[in-house]
Image 1 (spheres, rainbow, N blue to C red):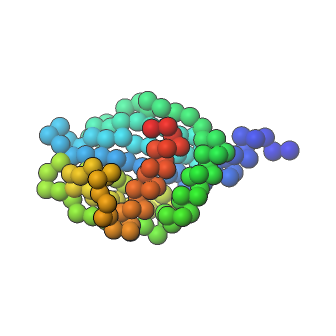
Image 2: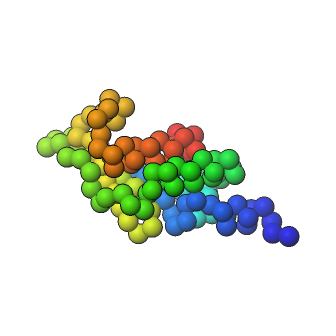
Length: 141
């Protein structure tokens, strides 16, 4: 019999590790939040300023239900086929959401806009936003 913990790790949709980074450029440099879901379905959420990443302010383990929700979104939004870059950076105070998964990075430049106000994102940008929302949802952020 396989222990439940090992069975969950074997089924985790975040194989390889999945990282979402939401950042904004500003006077003090680039700041934001990083959500990391590890291959064993444990997660951490931390803030960063420049290259300095703070200790995680949230940690946990995804439940089987959260793992299923995340797997569905990663499959539906076909994370592996996201382009490397979508959108146009703003000349100042640019906002980005990036996804690192499977050795690839997909970056969505939002300019200075609030992503909730962006109704006309290109398809790849909408997919980045959906994956980002799903990760934030399963980690309780």
